[in-house]
Every structure is written in structure tokens, then in C-alpha cells.
Image (cartoon, rainbow, N blue to C red):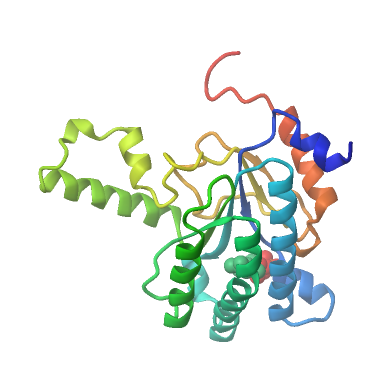
Length: 245
Ligand SMILES: CC(C)=CCC/C(C)=C/CC/C(C)=C/COP(=O)(O)OP(=O)(O)O
């Protein structure tokens, strides 16, 4: 049995892995390349890793591709990222369909260029009936934005008489979050590469009991061996969810 098959049969595999892919620019700088080449290398790595991750039994992968704060980056870099997202969605559509991967893009779509927005809708529509492999891509996403939009939606339901204040509980809240945690599990493992040890406004609600893993390697260098190391670390964790065991 190969390493991937062995992992896939391990019952302690994370069902949902969230990733903050960090270090593309530093990776490019170290090689005398431009930032856009770093992001391109990051995007290639992303898809290779997603394939490995699904093959080893994880059924939901979330990627923090572009944070709300990323709009503050130089205009050229933002343009290049939006163009890269478009290129990747177009190039990967046949793979999503062949491997039956459901795509869900979460975040505030208002500022995303129209052509990318249209393409996202197309990809989501084409993959919406697939079950078992979910790829959640966060673009113009922030955890605070997600919690706020969920609160607004619940408040509107109370105002419209659809629910009572007493009906608001964790389950009701989770149904309103963009990750639809009632449909997808909360992340078991969050990986942030490049040595930074913070969540940076990613899944604030969803990662309450997530195991946080911070390898120092830069994202474009995070390959299969590094992912296996992350899994070994995860499988040694004792998850208590606040209880004594
Ligand atoms: C399918 C799809 C949506 C693919 C594209 C994913 C992709 C490559 C996103 C880039 C995200 C990003 C801003 C990375 C951080 O590196 P950084 O620039 O912050 O690196 P640094 O920490 O070295 O500055």
C-alpha cells in the first residue's frame, strides 16, 4: 500500500482542511522573479495539493485566496491576481468536472471584476450537484464580514417574523455563515505556510476548535512531503473540544 492509500485509510484524517497560502512573493523574490510569477507558482501548487488532499480522504478544502485587506496591495498586483483567478478557473473547469469537485466561492462579490464574477457563477452552477469533494475558495473574504452578514440575515428574519430571537443559536448562526457549516464541516486543520502564526481574519467563527499548523516553508514549496508531515502532526493531536478525555 502506498503512502497516500495508507493515509486515506487512517480514520484520523481531517475531513476539512483550510489553507492560508502565504509566501508567494517571498518565494519569487528569493529566485529573482516578479511577484506575479510567485502567485503563478502558488496557483500551480494549490491544484496539485488539492488533488493529493482529496486522494487522501479529505472531503472539504478551503483556500484563503484573497482577503478583504488584499485590496490594499499595489494596483498591478491586484489586477494580476484577478486575472490569475480567471485563468485558473477556466483552465481547471474540466478537472473539476472530471473529478466531480463542487466549487463554492465565498466572500463579498461586489468589487470582483464582472468577467470573473460571471465565470465564478458558471463554475458554481456547473459543479453544484456534485457531492463528496468540496473546494471552497475565499475571495474578498474576511471572517468579520462573514459573521456580520450572518447577523444581518438573522436580524432580518426576526424583523420579518420568520424566526424568534429565542431561535437564534449556534446552529442557526452556522446555517447563515458563507461556509454553510451545516452543509460542510468546520475545519479540522488549518495550515498557514511561511512561518506567520496568525489567522488574519480568515475563519473566525469556524476555527473555534481547529488545529492550527504553521510550517515555515513558503507556499510554492509546500508539496506532498510537507502535507504528509502536516498530517502526521495532526494525527498526533488529541482533540478535546474543551472537554476532559
Ligand atoms: C484557483 C485560484 C483561486 C488560484 C489562485 C490562488 C493564489 C495563488 C492566490 C494568491 C494568494 C496570496 C495573496 C498569497 C500570499 O502570498 P504573499 O504575496 O502574501 O506572499 P508574501 O507573504 O511572501 O508577501
